Image (cartoon, rainbow, N blue to C red; front, side):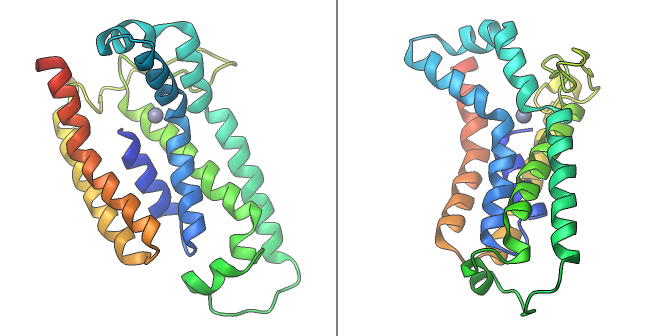
Amino acid sequence: MNTQSHVLMGAAFFGRPLPRLAWAGAAGGILPDLPMYSFVAVLGLLGYSVSDIFDRLYWEPWWQIANAIGHNFLLWGTLTIVAALAVARSRTAPPLMSSPVSDNAAAGSPDGVKGGWAALVLAFSASALLHSLIDFLTHRADAHMHFWPLSDWRFRSPVSYWDPDHYGSWFGLFEAALGVALIVVLFRRYRALPLRAGLLVALALYVAVPAFFYLTHHG
Ligand SMILES: [Zn+2]
């Protein structure tokens, strides 16, 4: 799936009720693909062509291992469980003064139960885990080693999120529709201006990314 969809899902599914939980969920959605973006940026600056980068260097072991770490079930699974236990523990601790939580009021509280560190880590790691799981189901030739270093096994999914020979066109339509729906949900849920600006960037990416690959491969 495209990174912006992971980011939107992270914010939508794990970002309630606080804007900063949405940021944590968004960060967890982008992190698995961050090594890829760093490599592409550096290699692009060094003058490598797009086809050199994606058709050759992408498949080098160092890049594949970076992908394996970013999309690691063991790493994100462990972190999610630990954070969930910490959140559960903080909820069963002696009750703090209860007050209705609204976006703005609770965002200002330094360490309320719902916005404490454990909750932030949970939103972040659960989002990274969801990203890894969706990639597991939608990557074929470019599948990741999700259980590395215990195993370098890759699941070659029958569905590819981009390859038209393996439902990629249909999946792309579904993904864009899902992305627009998530943008509407998030836009209504959060009033914070930076967050809404980010949503508009995500919306633009659904047009810009396919256009970029079309131009670099057909232009
Ligand atoms: Zn990914």
